[in-house]
Amino acid sequence: MKRLLVALLMAGAAGAAVRGVVMNRTTDKPAAGIAVTLMSMSAAGMQPVETVTTDAQGRFVFTKAPEAVHYLIEAQLDGVTYNRMVAPGEAVGEVELAVYHATDRPEPRPEQRIVFLEPAADALRVNETWLYRNDGKRTLYAPGAATLRFFVPEAAGNEVTVMVTAPGGMPVPRRAEREPRGGFYRLAFPVKPGETRFDVSYTLPAASGFTTRMPYPQTPTRLVVPAGVTLRGEGVEAVGPDPTGRAMIYEIRGRREFAVEIEGRGVLAELSEDAGPSLEQIPPAIYDRLAWILAPAAAALFLGFWLLYRTSPATKSPARSPRR
Image (cartoon, rainbow, N blue to C red; front, side, top):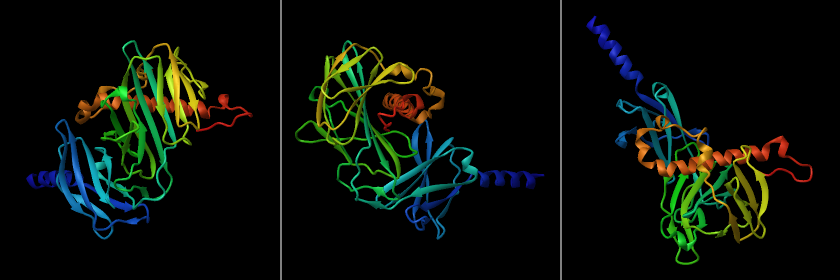
């Protein structure tokens, strides 16, 4: 009986081991000789549990049983870090971690810029979402080169928050470097295959207008404001309300600098009341980052509304083809 109990316990421990394979998705071959680290995620934060090296078939096995509910597997290739979350159910099977070779050509350019404006009595809250799309099989990255340049009005001071969400990843804070002149910031970050999102947040004193500069004039800029708030300015085109009717969308194209007049007040966070995640669904390790994560979450919600609006058959017109 004791031998049977020991065998069952050993079988359970073996089943709890995290095992998998690292695949080089640039070559579509297993990545041999890659160091892979298992990170535990708990209320105490992220802690390394074990580091192993992949074999000739790119496979790895972590023998230490972490106590955390969620795990993170991490590896590097060409100076770029790749990771993926491992859910409790996946820990008993084999998981795949995809890595890619890096290249500095072509230089990444944003596909869209979406500016969310929340005019209040005491301040103008600004959240900008920059979307990058990499449809290739290599990560676009040149160490030291700016992946993103963005403008922040001087009135915002140094209180600028940047969150970056890599394909399939979680929002992580990154520090942007302020350029000596022009009011621009720069940030170097690898653009992996898939969609990468940069969320920039800052607050301006209460004002009746908003002025910004655009380092990428070919990238369309969309402005989103609460319903009841009106924007006016040269080159500003009203697209229409979002599907919920609780926000208004404007568009600006081909301009390096523009200014808009703002009439009305309102907040956009109210839109996430029904669709936003509950606290119980957020791992304890990121409770201290809720203020940074909720703003990008609201931005993602609006982005979903925007894409739905642009692809809805009811919004299509023969005179104007829909744009993403």
